Amino acid sequence: MHALSAPTYEDVVDAAQRIEGIAHRTPVLTSTTANERTGASLFFKCENFQRMGAFKFRGAYNAISHFDAEQRTAGVLTYSSGNHAQAIALSARLAGIHATIVMPHDAPAAKVAATKGYGGEVITYDRYTENREDIGRRLAQERGMTLIPPYDHPHVIAGQGTAVKELIDEMGPLDFLFVCLGGGGLLAGSALSAAALSPQCRVIGVEPEAGNDGQQSLAKGEIVHIDVPHTIADGAASTHLGNYNFPIIKRNVAQIVTVSDAQLIDTMKFFAQRMKIVVEPTGCLAAAALLEKVVPVEGKRVGVLISGGNVDLQRLGEFLR
Ligand SMILES: *Cc1c(COP(=O)(O)O)cnc(C)c1O
Image (tube, rainbow, N blue to C red; front, side):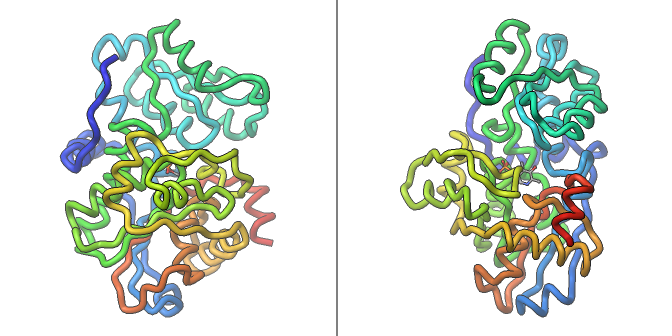
């Protein structure tokens, strides 16, 4: 397949039309307590209420909506043990096409079950001896399926950008935007929307302390690879930014900051107790940087991405105890 060109804000607008009426237009919540704690006006864009529980549905559905007849017949393939797997499985079912998901053989049973529940075919591999990207490429080639990776893809980035488009369309211009950062699909898409709709807005990416490859990459001016980080933010345990993502982040993101796992747990508690919402650890990254005052924002209008709410009940109980 030919290489796709870098995504632009026009692609975000196109994605917004493709997902309209299919993805949820998620609510924007406010909290007097959060505002008092930060001295700012915070607007929380709640993608924990998105279909399948995270923003990833936006990018996955947008990518599949671009398939031609031949691609639709062969189906979609991806590798992921997390929210992208469920997003692809659900999007494929809605589009009436076959989805194959490559997952580690020791992936949490609940995640495998959720992916199968959406109709996805799960193929397992041994993550200690096999490489998921090699398996993905081989299967895609053998079966003629189209591989949609979790973040390094123009249609995925454009789809993820629709959440911040909705946020700014609804709330007006922002001074700051805080975004959870893994491989950079959400951050790159969000930055495209912010640059187009609120050009003065400072976009801040937030990573787990243990996996600050994005921060290192921005400082070095090139993509830095790290070992798989140990963090409770499993959705941001990526080892490097994507090739499509990095140039957009370099151009449009002011700063990348980090938060600790302890700060993520405090933020999960804040969401449960004060705002009555369930947010997964990764989904707390952006809010944690604000509530823990990693970046001062007094007197400012601040957008905050809550990226997802998929957390095992047992683990949630342990975190909140
Ligand atoms: C995937 C994911 C992220 C990170 O998104 P990237 O596009 O990889 O940067 C953040 N939060 C949640 C809940 C996710 O599922």
